[in-house]
View 1 (cartoon, helix red, strand yellow):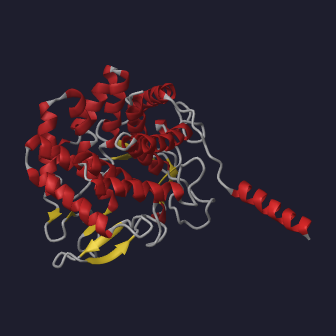
View 2 (cartoon, rainbow, N blue to C red; view 1 turned 90 degrees about the vertical axis):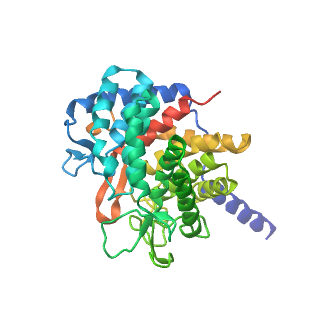
View 3 (cartoon, rainbow, N blue to C red; view 1 turned 180 degrees about the vertical axis):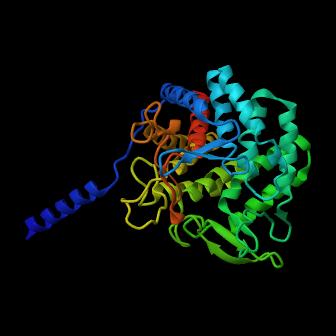
Amino acid sequence: MKYCRYTILLIITILSCTTQKKEVVSTFDKNKANEALQFATMQYEEMMKVVPDSLLPRTTHKDGKLGLVNATDWTSGFYSGLLWYLYEFNQKDTFKKEAINYTNLLENQQYNASTHDLGFMLYCSYGNGFRITKDSTYQNILVSGAKTLSSRFNNTIGCIKSWDWNPKWHFPVIVDNMMNLEYLFWASKVTRDSIFYKQAISHADVTLKNHFREDNSSVHMIDYDTITGKVIEKITVQGFSNESAWSRGQAWGLYGYTVMFRETKDQKYLAQAKRIASFIFKHPNMPVDLIPYWDFNASDIPNVPRDVSAATIIASALIELSQLVKHEAGKYYLSKAEIILENLASLKYTAKLGENNNFVLKHSTGYLPKNKEIDVPLIYADYYYIEALTRYTKLKP
């Protein structure tokens, strides 16, 4: 009897050890980051040969052809934005010329009051261009665009309106909208107009109050009443269900509240960024390689698509977060970013030269419930990957 009891305990111990996730230690370093940026340079040198003058790359269509969009698409700023990052890395005039041409293509978007996505469209393109060139024309366009974005703010609700396309919704606010707030902070500094700063704070605070569940996961969209400012409905539009944790939504939140802490030094934003990171990395459905499934609560895991775009946003946010916290916490966040980057740079997720329609990364998921952009390259996955690599190479030893 005694023998059987110890045998059973031994079997339980062995089984528990074998079912636990292995602790992964990354060997990623700045040399590997530079190699990844060099590969991205070569891949986008090929991309530049096939992109038309008036359109911008977004994805790969089901027929295998390059998916192109015009300047009004929410992803339109990522192509020139990543070209600016690559020019910063390689200093090749061809990249600068291409970045200028496709940045200029977006000039009229400074007046586009029909979308909240001006942060993606203008700050990723003109913002990177201004940071690198200090061109005053870029600054003027950015300020104009920030005023347009600001016009979508509702004082009763305290947020910037996200979408206009569904007449059933009164005032939809998506967690993605957190990514616009960095643009408003920039505008506040440049213009010395506090309205941008105040709107960013208000939007972040209302989102913090209403978007997050007890486990610190985020719902995708909230529809607000414009008269009372109260929540009407909570919907996870691009996720598995209204109660699920859509992976890219969690990434947007992590990135957004990291920026909020950087810009304000308010500890509540740092605390929220940490809580989101904890949710992401402690979730039982997070794969060992830290490239999340398209939704943390999707049915049929692990036989569902990954979302590389979510992984790149998380990695870029973690690199910045690692520099904003104390030493041990910083090491932890950086180590997670290194694991993500090392896996993204592997053949499992990085395309071969000249393949994948010249995008760098494979296996992103855009809008699965609508059967759109599933297991394909996406321009914003490449953008945040290149941003993360750039940030990593600039870290102090």
